[in-house]
Image (cartoon, rainbow, N blue to C red; front, side):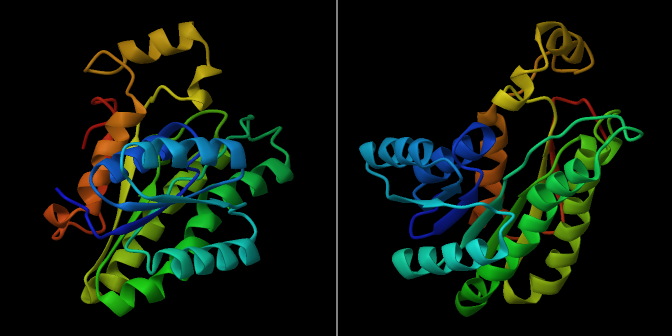
Length: 247
């Protein structure tokens, strides 16, 4: 499943699932452009990749800023030559019951989780079209498929990513560019750490495999979809949820 010669751009790469995806893609031979808001964490990630013989470059980016997205992806292509693989992973939560949810929290989640994927996809497409090869992978969520109380904004943004994935897959398929989504369930990250042990134990009881997932579980799915082995898969949502949601 070698990704040697490929260049991957990963958003939200400084921690959690994004960091795991960057490390896994680098292990498979890809050159990494890692983007997030935290310069120090990005530098640590780049150092970890290069220490094992990989190649990576860090780009500080606020994915909600359209001009930053344009300039950052342009800079990444200038430095690394192209972008073959885009992983739209950046995401936030601003949980609240819909009755009490502030418009600012709705907008922030939709802009970070959904609009950023549209912006990044738009900017990498020309590079992929030139080489007639591309992989766009959107990190959605099981809650974009089944909803979650207190997460109307998050669930809507993740459901929107699934629709975006399918539309892009139809638009770009004839140019040998695939677009797929990975839908994690409960994954052990900083985002879920705040939920507490009782919640996580309760969640594990709902999962047929009996455990919450790791960022590495998601990264493995992303690496597969980025590879030539997945060349006949597009417009698909790959569930990585331990059986929490089936069908």
